[in-house]
Image (cartoon, rainbow, N blue to C red; front, side, top):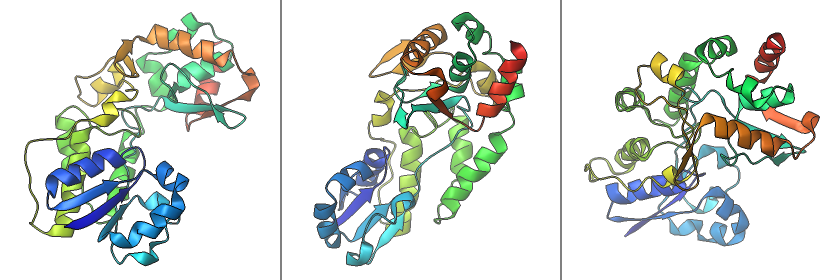
Length: 281
């Protein structure tokens, strides 16, 4: 039996499970990049055992691939179109944890830095603010970048993208795709590696990333792109919903533990949000 190894990020397990379904005559093993790094010597010594290493190209320089003749690069999903307000916050290089773990809101974080109350921050969650921040104008560029990222490795996902949109979107957050989308990419990988010698079915593996925090598509953004999934319900670990007011309150509580000027908001929209909120004060 052939052995394949999948090395990627948080999407590793989903991709490996999908490939196992598609290619039952192949033994598919998985190792996310963090596990690989922690046991690098052992994994490097085993690479020659695999007839295929399916690798996220972001990590191509971390693996010594001289021991294997066959490497297939499969990029990970990253798409900000549904969640332009999602960001990361650090202090002295250390991630700040919100009620959504590593996920934060640009608007909430900037509102806190500018000294707005929680009620004042809540009033910023409206379509006019999203328009002025540029949340509605970044879709085309995000889509083009997403498609080109897969194109670069021989994976054409244009028709799949349209299908995912018809089914109500394909991302739980900017970096966590739904399992249907992972499966569609895995099917393309299976065809690339095995021709027509793979099994397609309607069955899908469990969506392991659905256990992680799920960032909502804000109603105004969902409406703009013809989706009916818009809400302000945030899902944390493992299956708990809370609303926008609770997210604001929990984020503010988290930020109060750090020096205000030390909060580093990692977003393309940071400067726009700072300027916009300065005009509101």
